[in-house]
Image (cartoon, rainbow, N blue to C red; front, side):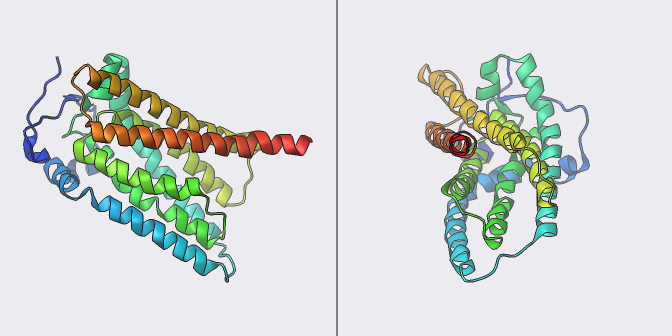
Length: 281
């Protein structure tokens, strides 16, 4: 039986956080000293909507910068970009390790529905890394700045992905969305590989085409799994099963993951299937 304590003072209402209690084998210094769950969850609960303003400001800023760069030469930024990607890769690897401990425990020792309907312990290290995940989406907006300054194509998938993930992750942090356990772990894991790949290629090393195709395949798989989990959670909520996710968040989640799945599928086909056929023809 899962303990369901009352954390209503964090939520501003009478609801409780349905979660899986888990005690980490050890804790890092930052997980102990930089983590005030009451304060952090209260801030997300109060200010999550600021992510919408950030997302709008981001879109306006990148298109303004893109227009400004049209009459200018591209910046090289090779070393700076490698450092940037390397830092994000390091963060993602550490986060995958720390968040993954709780994720793997729940997946291996609990029914599947617990992993998608029962949140992480809101006072533990997993919640710390879940909040870091939401905050990291602000930092990752810097990817686009490098893209534009180097005069690389600013495709819809890129800026749309950054903008909507920022909003959704902050909304999920506000209500401690249980399915976020899967979304966060998948994203941390994929980004560990993706940013490591980007860091190395930023230095001029070129991998075989199969490497970039594999990264895109991982991203596409992540989106398909996200759609599947959203459908499962909807089924649970329709039969009134306890599930730590609001219907508003769930519909937003499904719409985002479905659109991502279609966009990444199109990107994969255009980059690695149709392009290859044209070369053969």
